[in-house]
Length: 196
Length: 321
Image 1 (cartoon, rainbow over the protein chains, first blue to last red):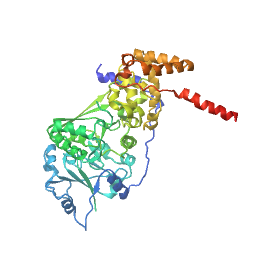
Image 2 (cartoon, chains in turn red, brown):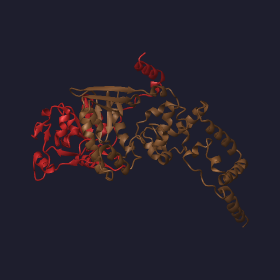
Image 3 (cartoon, rainbow over the protein chains, first blue to last red):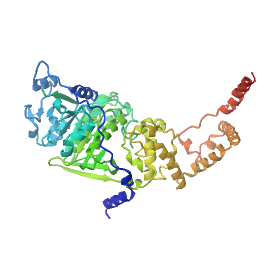
């Protein structure tokens, strides 16, 4: 008997009576506010930022202002130029040279200030979302979902994506004497640009 | 050995980290700024990640419906390990199984708020298959879990989501720290899980509790931790896994505490003994507790005798008046 079969056999023998533990109904709990204000408040709590356009400036102008020293700006969206396209990077490691990645999220979660990205938004290069120094996420207010329950119940991406990440602000650590440091191994900043 | 399930190096202070980094990363040994130390760590880790042929992660939840697993992290190291090298290997505890994707909301919301008090981890990543041009392998880890499932009194410990809330609240853990448990899983949850791996090695852990129940009170998945601590004591005693000295001492203490007169005589005798006995008589193999600790100082008077002397008389006077 393989160890796999041995484990499965033991689980069948030992498991509590399934009839005594019926599947509970799906929980849809909590605050159902899917508004932009709630999203922004949660985003700020987790260290993310909103990239606000000044006097009607374009996304590229706002990025040039916010990331003045950035040399390589990588675009993963058709409607933004950047200095390089994500498809041109070639290998996952190449993304380490990118200063700013511009990407469009299919939805956000108001409760957590989270944005979702999958291989569909990062064509062929999931590493780009983590190796880049800064990430700018284009998000439409209309795609906001209220909370974790509504997100998992309603969004099809959780069933279809092979790689799907909810990013809630930039990477962070508190491993050194409990002091919170924003910008650990992944992106150092995460900014949301509201789709006009 | 980690000293905490969520913050494994919590026993290290900034100067300890600075010293360690200076040794391995050649940074300033006197750097006392966690911000710049974390930056040094990032710079040191990047080339390692970029050169790696394989990346390993764990998994916080497994979803039966979709065959997905979920990894919750803050640093971003798991996502880097999974997406930069072409090969991703994940080890998943088989008890982390959630039936439906729609059930995940409950667990993801519970995890970080119980662990660190934050609403969610910075990264919550769902893996359902390898990325283009890559490989993904999953190792399902049993390590005693399927056996524990059959233990009527203890199987509910498999509900643990590893948030660490029981450690943060435990008065014993807070005083002694995680390393003192001598096992990967420390704190109250460790004290009920570790004996399932090795009853003899971890036989004393369920006894290191005051039965205050704080762990049970804060557990987000409602594991009856303090009940299980109590039940483990019985099991370990029945299996004769208690060390000889502990067993005998418990036996004597039981008899002694059942007889107040004898108990009081023994207490006053002990106080005298603590005051006059030479060290070799007090600190030897019969007293493993004293190996790294000092016994309490003898007191001139016990509370009981003080009460008898001062309060009982006053009360009587009060009654007379």
